[in-house]
Length: 275
Picture 1 (cartoon, rainbow, N blue to C red):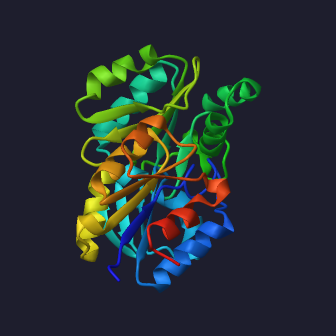
Picture 2 (tube, rainbow, N blue to C red; picture 1 turned 45 degrees about the horizontal axis):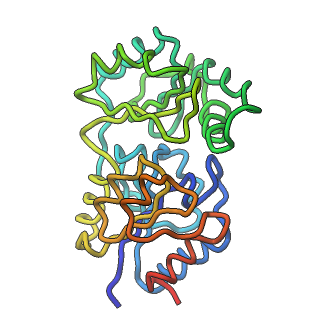
């Protein structure tokens, strides 16, 4: 059997958005695939700390912070935090425009109070959007930004009412960072991420494949949103969840059932990873 290196996005793919509980079918599929010699990595926008609860399931490694931190077991394969100047410029310009921000370190997420305003409008928002905002601004991993201790930061998550609020930061650092507004955002509530152009999920996939000795043709990636596009384009075989982004579906080799409909296990069988 030709062994594969498999990458699983978390929110909306391995788990429902903002959740830490994968379906039993997904964990069963991962374990069976590993028993047959395949390797399985997490591949998420979440930081390392938010991926740690999944380590108990025996994943071989992970890509955290959209590619800014890559690890195999206890070995760090890639580590690229923001510079002090980048961090200070982004925080100052975004906060000055009233943008809700959450700054992500390796082990902690520091969130301001502004994001909670959007949770007050939860009755009028779509479930995916609210689950993501709740995970960032009210989740168990969130720490008040007032307690930030100056540790390295890998990514910034934001919520705001309109794109104009992002303009000063884009004008200052648009050449160095991608300002991504997720397609599950709604008018009056834009949810997105600010990611260093030095990396993405695709570059992280190539780093992991090279470190583990896999040809890129023997890699498989699972995702559901536009933030997964670089991973989907980098891997040998790409899979999008049925309830995922239409944009991502257009670029994927296979569309599988949703997370709650045992999509991961279905796709693993379809691709011959397990019986």
